[in-house]
Image (cartoon, rainbow, N blue to C red; front, side, top):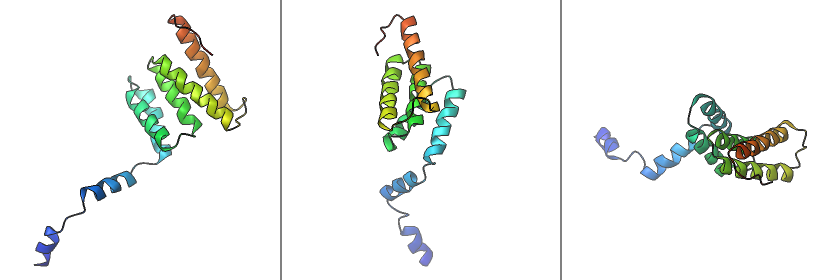
Length: 128
């Protein structure tokens, strides 16, 4: 009789199960590293872009995520989006008082130059 009662009891509402699924997400750093691997291994940048955008939705103050997202758009040939993300990252660098000599600042500068070169090669305008 006890077994029958246990079987009839719901295993938790669907809402509770969804909440526990969210609790089981891999760590922020793990998902960031996965996005880097996706860029290296996959011909498409769509999945990496989705992962990185989700990370920014959780925490938009991580400079490495902004840089990798800009690089993802650049690699996917989406130069306008890459430029917008790069500019937002550069603003965040300034806001966080990051020295222009730090690696992340140099990485953003390199990305910005690469985007400008690609836009020029594609016949686009260069806007600073």
